[in-house]
Image (cartoon, rainbow, N blue to C red; front, side, top):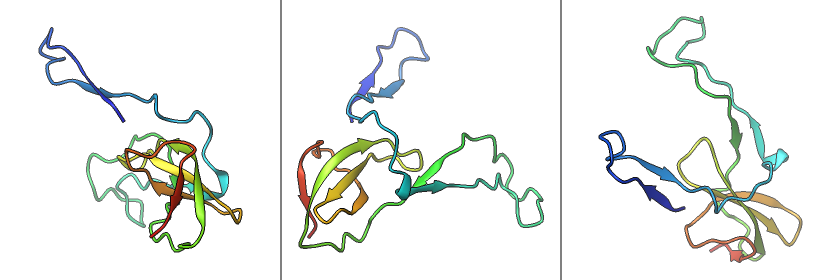
Length: 119
């Protein structure tokens, strides 16, 4: 995940930075590991605004991340590295030998095709 820093040729670009998306795989997310995330826009169960300034965001799908990594004995292959709209980190789709597919938070050194073992 490389960061591009801009030259200060105007006050607006003095502190401007962008993220390169060249390390991402250009495929759609795994359908069984995603679900629609409903935004409440700062409203409570009666529909009244309880938090000011919320709302108007882009529609997102939530990716189910395997934080526990309980499959210790099996080796997984990194299939894709994807963008996650719900967090700042990249996520990696792992294909295990027994047919399971899981998302994990991707470290910077992880590349597509590498083999990963939990533990």
